[in-house]
Length: 406
Image 1 (tube, rainbow, N blue to C red):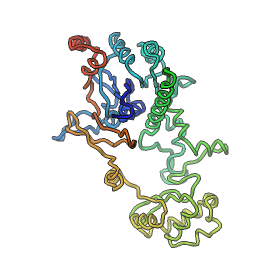
Image 2: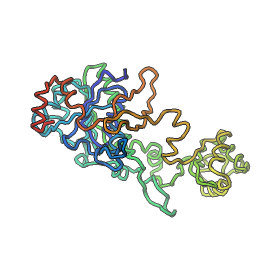
Image 3: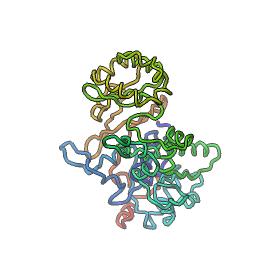
């Protein structure tokens, strides 16, 4: 059994940040009930192409985006704009440990599904609200999406080619990283609240904001600014504090060189056939290499073009210098280490026969992640969940379905 198999999660969230947190909890064994709008469900169900195909190559209508964040959950369709739908969600919350939602601030209060309303029926409830800007502040009422938060929160000012180079300008990260990080932080907060509840018996409200997470995850770049007062500039693939730590051209492409200390730089210089670099006072220490970046980087680029990527990786690995290729996703999922770690898995799927998934990176020795349930079809578990959790009989479910509540 999973580490969290004793917990029930009511997942009212859509798109990515909230569902990502729900999927982590589900991977760890929690019973995650995903409540969706009848007829359309989670927005990401329609965010395609691409869509999952069946054995005949026909589209199943299940978007790849949706499939990335919803495995191990059970889908229930409830229209909680209707009073009977609100009652059902409240009853589910009364029998749950955790609620995850990402509606606009105050949006669920009109339905009696906000934290204070649900706390009244379940004081032990841990209620995690995920919004763009949090429950307070001048932007609290604004909608927030990952892309705009990457821009507003400073990440895009650090990402992209530097001014003066071809293609200069800010660039977003190629995945919705702020959403993913918010999902991770939400999960950490939920687990912390569970630990507190174990000691006190009391639940609590968690206020998670994409902007807060984005700013927090600026990490060393934020500290570079806060300690100097100077906003860091875009450096492309270079590192602001370490040199050389970037991509370099090779005879057949590019590779990444990540020299983390002076000893590694000396080894690199020897492999590059330029041992004198390690004793050059301009380059002997990382501090000097950062100060003289403009002189060193062109010298390295002139040297790296005479070997292939495979030759550089092989020779530098043998010398103990961290480096690697720049893989596309086809190469990633063919990489020997990725294969050895089992990072691609397949799960049975009701429409396609099977659905590929990216494995959870969490490796627990006693309670390993189990892949129990493919990302569910819309409303796939409505009847069984309402019967199992709320004790509703088939006639009641038919009546609610006829009334458009389910």
